[in-house]
Length: 105
Image (cartoon, rainbow, N blue to C red):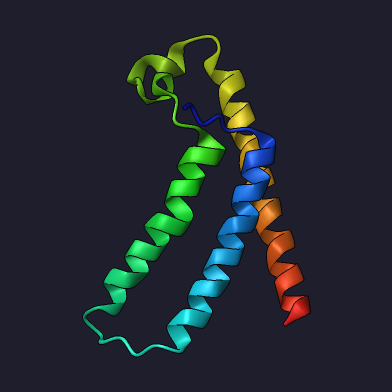
């Protein structure tokens, strides 16, 4: 199964990231964590809730982009433009979800 990064998946990933970080914040306030464990939990949350959706659903996990010489190929500029647009959709999804959560709470 191949995961394709599209504008729709980027929008949904942004909303999912905002929702999951809000739920993580609520969960964290109700738990006691020692000062040694807290940074590890935060790092794991950032990696799972922010980095993984961004790589899979916004940038896309296509092996051609991980080639160092890909930036010199003709299709790279159009690809990077589309990644920029998907990043804006990701941010838009996060902002809309965060605002709706703030208005609901």
